[in-house]
Structure formats: structure tokens, C-alpha cells
Length: 177
Ligand SMILES: Cc1cc2nc3c(=O)[nH]c(=O)nc-3n(C[C@H](O)[C@H](O)[C@H](O)COP(=O)(O)O)c2cc1C
Image (tube, rainbow, N blue to C red; front, top):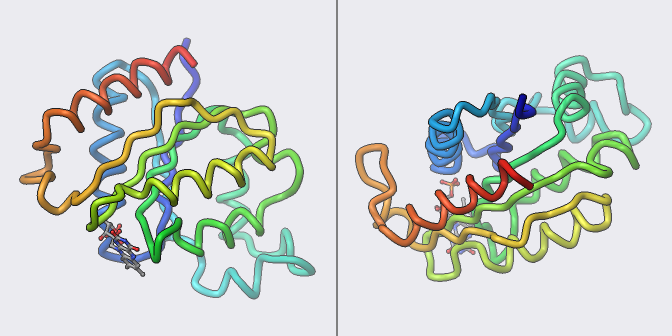
């Protein structure tokens, strides 16, 4: 039995395309009969920066529900939009609120970047890879960069054939990873 894969929609922007791409990725996994769930950072409690971090660790029950999902997960896909040449700050703040060192230690991850510009989140993924390395997470080598995503995602589907191919390859590899 394959373990459930948790897809982390890595921004709290309410109308984020990242969430739509996360749902798309979920369908790719479900087509291979892989159980999935989406962990959507837009559902984080609005005050979590104050109510769930540092001396308040463990005190916010809504945030604790996120910790529980991470604790139960073994494999994670991070869908990461490029914000100001890197990953969204809320993603780092979220992880800063999780228990250390075991939340992601020894677990497995794969990365997908998306951007309006031509980088496809290349730097965002590199930066996030460094954080995951620090946390002791094994990150799969194949990282998918969906550049100018607004031109290549129409009516709920990725329309760029290379993007489709790379995502399929990543899904196949990550199931075996
Ligand atoms: C705060 C912010 C910063 C952004 N910075 C960049 C950037 O540096 N480079 C880029 O190509 N796109 C940038 N974008 C656009 C997003 O990467 C793009 O819309 C992405 O496809 C999906 O973001 P979304 O999930 O918030 O919709 C930025 C968007 C926001 C909201």
C-alpha cells in the first residue's frame, strides 16, 4: 500500500493559482490510485504568527491540526509560487511554527515551482531545498518549474506539453522515491 502523499499549497493568498495547481497535481496522483490530501496554507489561522510560534508553540488548536497532518505525513509535494525571487514568507513562517527537529526529518519531498515570469520559481525551489536539507528531508532531484503559468494553464489543465511530461515523470518517480 502506497503511503498518502500530502500536497502543500505553499501560499496563504486567498485567490492563489498555487491552490488550483495543487488540485491539478492531486488529480495526477489520484489517477495512479495514490491517496492524497492538500495542506493549504490559506487556511492557517490569521494570527498564527503571534498565537502559534515560539512561546505560544502548541497553544493554537487550529495550528496544531496542521502540525498533526505534517506529523502523520511521510511524503510531501510542495507547490511553491515565486514571490519576490524566492518562496512565500508564509511558508517559512509556517515551518518555523512546527516542532523541531522531527517534523520533516527523514521524510521525503518533491518540489514544483510556478511563476508569472520566466524563472518558474527556480530560485524559490533552490532556497526551499536548502531549508529542507537543514530539516533532514530527502528531496527528489527532479524539480518542475512552471514558468509563465498564466499562459500555460487553461480550463483546469496544463496546456504546455513539456510541463505535462515533466509533471508525469515527477509523479512516477515520486511514487517510487
Ligand atoms: C507577493 C508576490 C510576489 C511575486 N513575485 C514574483 C516574482 O518575483 N517573480 C515572478 O515571476 N512572479 C511573481 N509573482 C507572481 C506569482 O509567482 C504568480 O502569479 C504565480 O504563478 C502564482 O502565484 P499565486 O499562487 O499567488 O497566484 C508574485 C506574486 C505575488 C503575490
